[in-house]
Image (cartoon, rainbow, N blue to C red):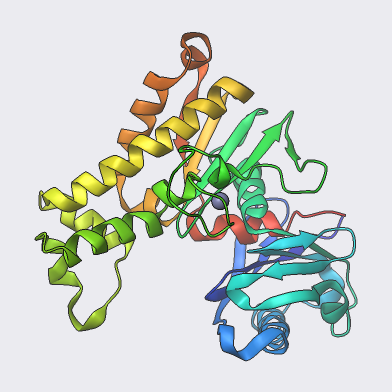
Length: 316
Ligand SMILES: [Zn+2]
């Protein structure tokens, strides 16, 4: 087996490209590039190709030592053909990533989605190492998850299993980007919390978060954390509300799948421990008594690198 792989995490605003030691999961070198939506698919391929070239040059490792290039993209993917079917944040549709990368590098190229690669990373070298039945849930702009059964990712009939963000938690609820109403994502994501805070501020509620929002800065997970630390009533209230919904969604997953472990990750979980603690406590309380006795919770351990490490292990 060749010792190295390249893992690529293609997100809405940035692409992270890393050279990964397949034996240890160690990230040897990495390159980060910004992806701007307005520059289209050509730009995205160019950024990835440039990144791979830089990586090989810096690490003095030749392409012959690379076993594969794995790409995880924030969007819907056709794994068999290596096609990014739709990535709204990148304004990319029907982009044949495998073919385009192979025009420059003659190694096997595999495609997966962003949540899947993060889960593979956590399973191989992170919080889920050694566990067989796991659900990894990532909370950020949206809420995504990946289900692991007997050590393997469950993809489902159309490859879309794990869409926890679109579990319906309120039949007549808030509209969701997917077109439905009352999806968990519309209540429990960082974007949902942001909207709640902004809505309340517009109505004249006071919050210390305004101190961080000068010059039109948008709300970040760190601002949410700092405001809670300062005892801010509005921000705490909005986060409590999101925790109530997310814990309800997670309790449903615990009852339905009966996993050993739930791994929680993503920007909001990393930055706001208050939210994480509240969610796990409430999720346990809301689950049925028997599955609740066995369930464990852990925070994702690889941070920003979980995606690239997992992508390095994508297979056909
Ligand atoms: Zn939805």
